[in-house]
Amino acid sequence: VWNNCLQVIKDNIPARSFATWFEPIKALRIEGDVLTIQVPSLFFYEWLEEHYVNLLRKTVKQQLGENARLEYNIVVEKSSNSNPYTTNIPSNGNGAAGSKQSIPVPVALNRDIKNPFVIPGLQKLQVNPQLNQNYTFDNFIEGDCNRLARSAGYAVAQKPGGTSFNPLMVYGGVGLGKTHLVQAIGNEIKKNFPDKLVIYVSCEKFCQQFVDSLKNRTINDFVNFYQVMDVIIMDDVHNFAGKEKTQDIFFHIFNHLHQSGKQVILTSDQPPKDLSGLVERLLSRFKWGLSADMQIPDLETRMAILQKKMYSDGIELPYEVVEYVANNIDNNVRELEGAMVSLLAQSTLNKKEIDLDLAKSMLKNFIKNSHKEISIEYIQKLVCDYFEVPVEMVKSKTRKREIVQARQISMYLAKSYTKTSLKSIGAFFGGRDHSTVIYACQTVVDLIETDKKFKSYVQDIQKKLKLS
Ligand code: ADP
Ligand code: MG
Image (cartoon, rainbow, N blue to C red; front, side, top):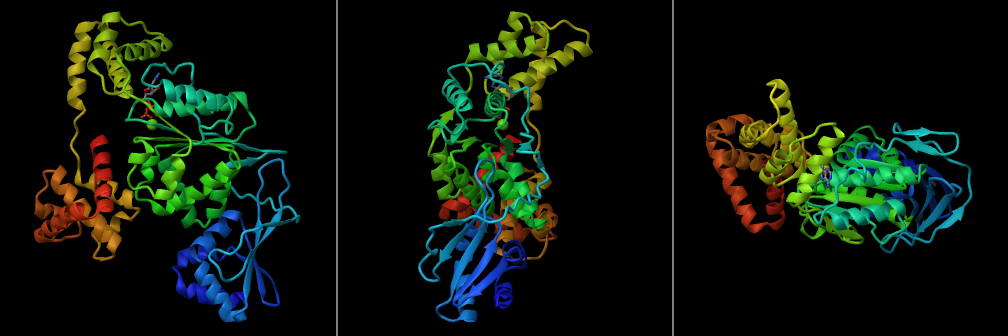
């Protein structure tokens, strides 16, 4: 019976979705009208109920008659103290998502974690937290600009999951110390609680892992890996913009962790209320805990940061040089450090003392060098990454909506940000002529005016272009 169902389902959904979500299902038994299937995790169950409930229900009824019911048997992975068990979740075949009372039934242990990141120890899992040891609270300079974020972060590190700062969202512009701070929180947690499973992951890497896991059919391992963590630190969540499938997965992981009292730490370049391109339900979760901002440090803090860095590298700088650099680079800490590194390099190369004159001549170059040109290839890559579409498709003849959208936006941005002629832009995107480019640009301009979501996509991409 189940095989018949699978045949029907296979004909109704894309092959990859079928492989991901239906092939791992095992049919367990039929008793009367009730078909019981086994799914590998709670997450799997939720996903099926959310995305395929109608198809499943229809198909099972076709095979077993109008009174058919579907029951799920879920293999639940529990990380440490409690026993693994299997849960029956009756789904009554009508009603929205089936009723969700769970009846835990002890069954044999299923501990087959095929996960490349996890090294199963004798008793407990060990995971490389992917933290940079150089980012600590010790070398993070406190100032008015970051006081709230720092102290909330410190509190979280003493009691992960046990404060109301869950999630803790640290937001602010580039180079202001967000990554440093959240990594410091991670390192501090590992110091205080060596047994806790902590993972740092950039949003970009998470998105890539998700795509890979779809390709390799290891989605279940991917989700399991994150769901057993005690602390997840995700950097730059604004990069979720436009990636709805990945957001969907993270939403489930987030809920699972949050419900089990695990700590979630996030960074972003905007406060949650201004994040565009994120689905509403995920945003609403991001607003639950505490959002703390990081501002541009004032002059004194900038000087303190420079002095501390130099000091830890064993270098002493004249006060006036520190002051000069801190005075002239006043928009972000990373550039401040970059300027200092160039200054050191200059002084070594030219065998010159670091003095005010050297600082002055170097800073001129530094400011000039920060304007590079944007290439059409780069625009294409950025747009394709953003919409999760393959680069080749944009150059192809396809008229699929999402590809056309990526192609038109790329053309529009190429026209606005490069000196490339319309003819060359058309040629670049699969040998199209210049009237196609004009049409694309006009379409984009029209859509920006009429479609809010579309507008936010374009703005997001423009923001990324400007940062590069
Ligand atoms: P962001 O993630 O916000 O873009 P980073 O955390 O990468 O910024 O910070 C950029 C650089 O500035 C890092 O080398 C970091 O160590 C340094 N930095 C930022 N803020 C501070 C601070 N308050 N104290 C010490 N170093 C800082
Ligand atoms: Mg960062």
